[in-house]
Image (cartoon, rainbow, N blue to C red; front, side):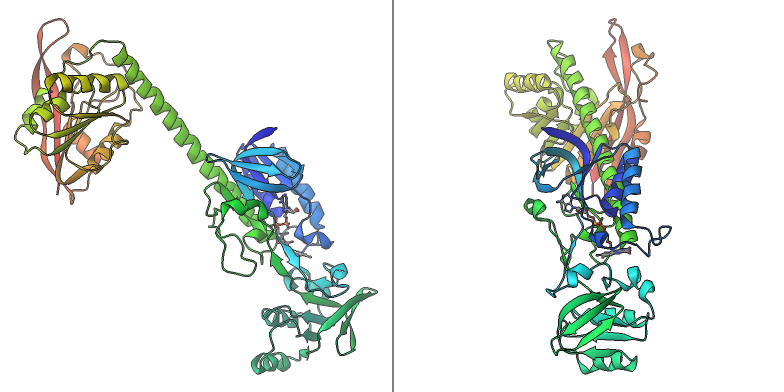
Length: 511
Ligand SMILES: Cc1cc2nc3c(=O)[nH]c(=O)nc-3n(C[C@H](O)[C@H](O)[C@H](O)COP(=O)(O)OP(=O)(O)OC[C@H]3O[C@@H](n4cnc5c(N)ncnc54)[C@H](O)[C@@H]3O)c2cc1C
């Protein structure tokens, strides 16, 4: 069975639930899959979390789940076994065989603290064997405290612990051999250093007995010890996510939780193993917002693509409904402007039935026409054959499907009655295809034809060349305006009477 979600969050700790809250509040269909083993599950109280000081970490998660569910988030117990890239989404395979599809995933699976293999240590973990002076130091301040070094960073931890008590013993065997400098610093503040390895930890009431390899035993109120951070991200192996160069090799993310894969976000300890609950909540919240931002952008992109396809289908329908739409002759204004140019390569954007392109080919141009209507392109190709010239026609939207630069890019009467027709954007894209020294020629209706003064209210304005130039906003350092004028063109009105059209001419040359 496959379930479809906007976002699937892997891990329902504080990071995952914070992401879920943002996504739920953004009305995103969100699923949290949680294996139920948050990193701080060994501790009965939580500190350093503003507004929740001393709270049971489980109570915070319970509240977080209730809050997320109130915004429609679904939360299930389970483990994610594998992620699979599906191009426009991610397939999330659970260990029980369920498959969820998500437009984006947030990895908030936390870390595991890999403790040294000291008998009795894991039983004391989170109670009298503590990982962080900020989270649990105050509660044991002033007591007899130990710091068991597991890496060179243990010195740093020892200094922090000394801030809490003047009775501190450092068990140095698990770190690198301590140099004179470090020994001197610790001694200067009355910290004793034990060189023998710790071989056992056992409870005695609320206290701990620390046994060392030299046969000594010391009774302490608590020890601080840093486990090595382990990220268990085998489920994301296929994604080759970039890692940061720090202990545990966490996922490398930006401020919005973006990983190196566009549909994979990450938050919490998987991105910052040193992070506490507030840091993890903050990054979860940002990742949730990051996912929503990306999905929102994608929703708009998709809507635009659908609208464009609909509009293009409309053009095809119009061409297909008639045997022939246009005259097959070149537009008089186009011919008048282009006549004096040295032929080269030319592209006509919106070439219709090919009248202008075929004329260009007849003048010696290597001419290409692009149009959204396959019917128009077929007719244009037939017209070139009929007139015995070589011209290339392709089906495409704007300049999108045509590669390369051209000496002349022509956009003749690239109009639509539809108010959301992206004319200016298409003209800018056309300008991008002009080769250095080449020209962009825009010929347009500067006013409606005299027989159609009753234009629909919603129709886009027919603009003067000056107005179009201002909207196009091409960089004057790069573009020189060679022509900007309205030319009258004599035509025959639909009722057979003579009439004149206002053709707007805008000719740029790329410097
Ligand atoms: C003993 C101890 C005490 C601590 N005390 C404090 C404290 O007092 N104050 C403080 O600020 N910080 C404290 N911390 C740090 C705190 O635990 C972390 O900062 C925090 O838990 C990180 O949140 P997270 O959401 O990233 O990961 P976690 O809280 O670890 O949550 C990750 C969740 O993802 C789940 N998961 C993992 N893999 C999968 C998978 N494949 N599929 C589905 N689910 C998965 C896990 O089971 C877990 O439920 C403590 C840490 C420890 C070790």
